[in-house]
Each structure stands twice: as structure tokens, then as C-alpha cells.
Image (cartoon, rainbow, N blue to C red; front, side, top):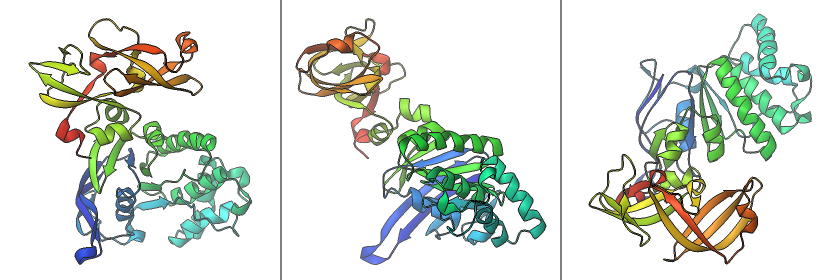
Length: 358
């Protein structure tokens, strides 16, 4: 288990100082696939470099098995890193690249070859052991970089946006491959990405970061269904935001008659109401729902569904996704009127001060 306690990092001093991380507290469990997710400059790579030992913290602790390793040199930590660039030696073969990592750590020579063979089997690259890395595809180079990082048997594997250079199809394939490896080996993976789909696909838990702070730490479904604030809601998937007011235990939205609050909601006064596009129902939903009328402003066909932008009567816009296996999408046309419903229990209420904090 890795305990990150009040970890902070400041670059520079005086007026030019930049606070990259602000008192980060996370516990990462043994054998967990944990993802640091956020936009460029949010501090996720800085945090990864602190765990690796490439940077020293300005404050706080990195506690592994009860010992603070914050000042331990990188080569004395049970940690290894896979970089975005792979950092392979082009003049070496696959087997030589993997062996290099072991030899650099002083592994007994008699143990190197068997371990290289073992790890190349695991990453399904044994048949290319004698090929030079410069002669391989991006996906193959990715596997070799993984093999080299895994060969010394680290406790924790750090992955800094390792899939960003791959094309979409290969990136999807490698997402499942990474998760398979992590489960098979039982290692702790700490993965850095700005890609929400990668994070949702692979992670046991995700830490969403912005401005050097943690916005929310949770499993993928909780982040998607119950975001802590507007920043998380927007960064994890698509979302609609409408202004509403809660009074007397009821919600007023878009000029419609007040409706009961969603189950478990506790708010009063002005609120931001969030609903995902796929939760918007075409027509009248029945039961507890807010019914809204508008006209179709834009249609975007995307294969399995059509993305509809609706201009509501009060001037707000609402996005929804209509499955293309329904006959309704065939009759949609820009400028046509459309009635939709927002089921009450699909709504998430964010207090105005929290919604705007990010």
C-alpha cells in the first residue's frame, strides 16, 4: 500500500514560484490499477515523478509499507516507469532491451536470460526476441517497453501516458492488454492520462486532478454518475448543465412547474442541474420527469447514435444521444420541434458555489 500524505511540490522561488501540487492525500492499494486523470498542467505527471523519485517533494510524505520513501533515490525504490516515448535502444534487439534493465540493476547474469524469456512470453513478444526495436510497430515497441519495466519485478509500475502515440484502434487494443497484464501479475499500476476513455476503461479507481489539487477520487462509475463538482462532471464524459432553484423540497427548472427532488438529493437555493446526454428521453417519459420543448438546432451522426443539440424555449441548449436503431432518428431534421423529458432520478444537483469552484 502506498500512502501519499500532504504531498506538495513547488518549482522556483519568490515571485516566480509555481505551486505544482497542493497537499495531495491518496492511499493506493496493493494490486490496484490507479489512474491520475486531468488536463495538461494539472500536476499528474509531477505527482508521478515524485513517486518515481525523479523529483523531490517540497513537503509531505510518500509512505510505502510504513516507510517514508520521499527522499529515497529512484534506483532504491521498488518502482519502475514506462515513458510516453518508450525510451528503447534502436540498435538493440528486443531481448537485449529487456536484459538491459536487469543488468543495470545488477541482476545475477545466470538469472537474466530466463527472466527475459519469461517476461517476453507474458507480453507476447517471444517470437520477436531477435528483432531490433527500430524495426517494430508502435504497439510492439510498447510491449517491449512494458517488458523491460516489468522484468525487475517492481512492486509499483508507473505509466506516463504510454498510449498517446498510438492510433485509435491500437490504443483500444493496448488498453485491454494493459489491464490483462496488471491482473495477471497482481502489480500496482499507477497510470497517467488526460484521456477520460482510457481512465474509465482500465481503472479500479481514478483521481481527477486540476490546478495541482484533487477534485475527486472514486471508482469510474461513481465519478461518472456522481461527480463531486462541475469540473469532474465535464471532464468525465459529456454533460448538460441547467440552472435551477430548490425551495420547499422541490426543484424548479427551465421555467417548468416544480418537481420532487431526486432521491438522496439535499440542496436548497440556486443549484446547477446536471444530466448526461444519454439520459435525456425523447418524448414524455411518464412518472417523475421534467418535460421540455424546443427545436433541433444541430444533428451529428456518429454511427451507433445521433448527437442532437436542442434549443429550449428559454434559450438554453440541451444535448442528447438518440440510438440509431430507433426509427425516430430517421425523421429528425434541423429546425423541427422536439419534446424531451429529464427523469428526476437522472438529475444530479450541484450547489452553485461547488459547481463553479473548478
